[in-house]
Amino acid sequence: MRLNELVKISLEGGILSREQCRQVLNCPDGEVLALLDAAHKVRHRYFGNVVHIQVLTNAKSGLCPEDCHYCSQSRVSTAEIEHYPLLSKDKIVEEALRAKQLKAKRYCMALSGRGPSKSEIEKLCDIIRAIKKQTQLSVCLSVGVLEEGQAEQLKAAGLDRVNHNLNTSERFYPQICTTHTYQDRLQTVTRCRAAGLEVCSGGIVGQGETDEDIIDLLMALRAVEAESIPLNFLVPIKGTPFQDRSQGLNPRRCLKILCLARFLNPDREIRVAGGREYHLRSLQPLSLYAANSIFVTGYLTTGGQPADEAWQMIADLGFELEVEGMSK
Image 1 (cartoon, one colour):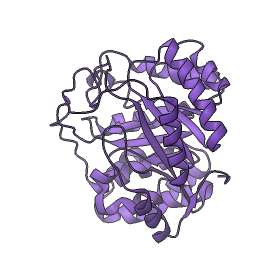
Image 2: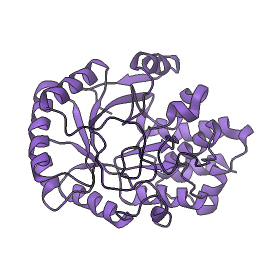
Image 3: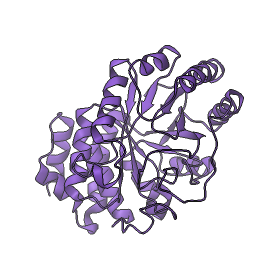
């Protein structure tokens, strides 16, 4: 594998061939450090030594009619999780203020369900205005499938970005969910873009997909020009259909996937998201040679690395923490 050639193609705006993508995913374990060095050359061009953190609040938990097989909040899950409706404005603003104290650049809210009701949209708009007034943080919202006009309402309230993951390839999508389609997800991404919102869209690996599916997902994310690409590594949660799924993941495999994401999306924010602690373990710091963003404290129904440990990890790498008010 000619790593300098991959760097050159990526930096010049080209697209790796599928064969080159396969070579990255199947890089010999003994060459992973060289692969990371190549990915870091691309990452450094656009992001230097800067890393930023994000904090996520599960603003509405469970009670979801969808059958996403990976999710502990879905209707087919028997996982022992909390179930509650949309949190109050005061509670969510409190969480946003906490995110600012944790040196987050962006605050994220997620709501379970197929999509928001009219009343939820109105409440969310009120919450977003309050967060922006009190924290000035960039705000991202993960709220499911958006209907016509809803993205515009959220944008008018001050929302910066919508998270709506493609999750996997179009081919593999029916294997992870049957209550909505890949095209439903693409349509929501298109609506958000048309409303002037930034797009955060990524995926989950380790669900039984092939290398070709991973390549298709990363190519699709390039095509929709997502500003932010969160990559999740499946955590098998007891009570979900995927609780016994053999992910085929290890720290080195995760790093190779992150490197490919960087080569294919050189100037995009790439975040090591769910499963970072579970799958990367002692190799977590190496992920930041390809990625430039992480979550801290936790995810939707699982915990995560404490913020102070993340700050120390970033400092130990010689990287700089990007906080609210700094340019990229």
